[in-house]
Amino acid sequence: MVSVPNERLRAALGELDPSVEVIVWDMKHDAPREKIDIVVPPYLDGTKPLAKLRGLETWLVQSQSIGYNGVEGALPEGHVYANAASVHEASTAELALALVLASQRGLDDFVRAASEGRWAPAWHDSLADRRVLLVGYGGVGAAIASRLEPFEVTIQRVASRERVDERGRVHGPSALAELLPAADVVIVVVPLSDETEHLVNDDFLSRMHDGALLVNVARGQVADTEAILRHARSGRLRFALDVTDPEPLPASHELLTLTNVLISPHVGGATTAMLPRMARLLAAQIERMLAGESPANVVLRS
Picture (cartoon, rainbow, N blue to C red):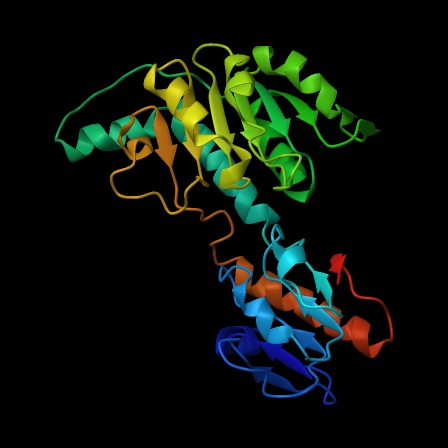
């Protein structure tokens, strides 16, 4: 027994083993059965629907998101929770690269000028020959690095632990203070946790050199909004933010008025790639269940 939150995901699953029944449950009401082996909660509804799992017997709760901040405190006892690693990495990396290119080449300035009927050619920074610092190096960070490499940049990487991989050295957190001053572009893609909340603070931003670009495709709370505003108001730094704190931003928020701040409304994974990739992940989890294997991508057990 598998529940999905909408008909689109059920249709995308296609043909399954005849022993598998798929039902639609949006988790706005109590569970329609006492046991549902795999439950897929709605996308972008936060942790509130998880309360509907109380008293329900499950094999797996399969999220449609990579991030799972807040889930540990909301997941009722007795459940196994998996994130959606493999679903959003490509799309989020595409958006990160798009934000970098748009900011470096001044596309937002050109759009504003065109909307005012002005022809406004200008010189802007290239992406080629820039030094890019990736802060966070999981699946999304690796996908961003793969897309950046053809642009003739120098890439440095920082993750939660130091290591060496096929691309060379991945620095640990202690190297961040030393690496920030040399970076022309800093892309933040760390998961939100107690350790990373307000990682991008005044000290972090003060270490970046004048004119550098900070891109946040992680979570809004990873950055201190007041610190961003201080460095954006002065024009010293540039920002491209797919995530903000608060979110959504109020219509009158100052971040929306600054020409050196480019904002997209938390749409890193919102592409046509999501549905087929989510369906493939869910089908693979079903196959694992039928084969008596453990689920993939497990991040929490309550």
